[in-house]
Length: 203
Ligand code: ATP
Ligand code: MG
Image 1 (cartoon, rainbow, N blue to C red):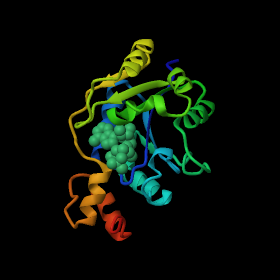
Image 2 (tube, rainbow, N blue to C red; image 1 turned 180 degrees about the vertical axis):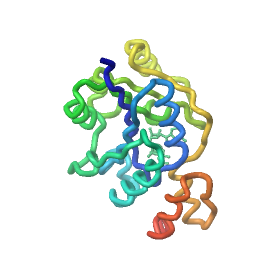
Image 3 (cartoon, rainbow, N blue to C red; image 1 turned 90 degrees about the vertical axis):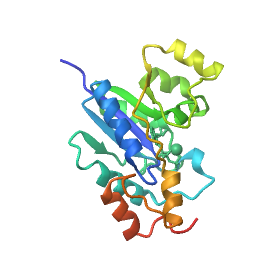
Image 4 (tube, helix red, strand yellow; image 1 turned 45 degrees about the horizontal axis):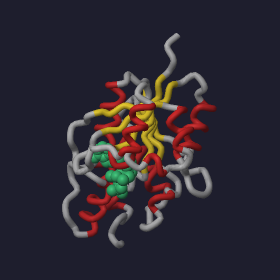
């Protein structure tokens, strides 16, 4: 029997936007995964410098955005964990839940280039596939250390060209704050949620 393949996309999703959704769909197609699991982060260790919206808002926006795709799912495992959330712990937890599954962890090029600074990168690299999706504005020239990672993990680290979408959550938050339109950058249902709950009005 073919083992199940699960693509996993972690993120702050503050808010989720079409850059995330297009990337997830491309990975699902390219690597023939059965589903994509979106995992909004709890307290992200690298985002302590700015206030992140409450986890429940981020979870609900992610759920709304993924609901129309029968193969997209949204998980609460990170937001229910206390303290900082680290990807390596999440992958370990997923491997316990789905012992037979092959996991493809998706990162944008920016997140991928920082992977060696994450908790326990060696375990992460050895426990799942990593897909680095190209993202406009982020250089693809890898540092020497990253080149070594790419070389040593050729079979499990993949670079994927995704249709260029220079959308980012930070830009969307700024636009909301400045009263600029965000229409067509993210699903309409998420846009409505942002306005209904008054998110991103203040810094
Ligand atoms: P922020 O601007 O607040 O950092 P973001 O748009 O980068 O938000 P995150 O929640 O930080 O969104 O990203 C989650 C994951 O999605 C990361 O791996 C990131 O690199 C990736 N990602 C985000 N936007 C895009 C995009 N437009 N194209 C490809 N990957 C993306
Ligand atoms: Mg980001």
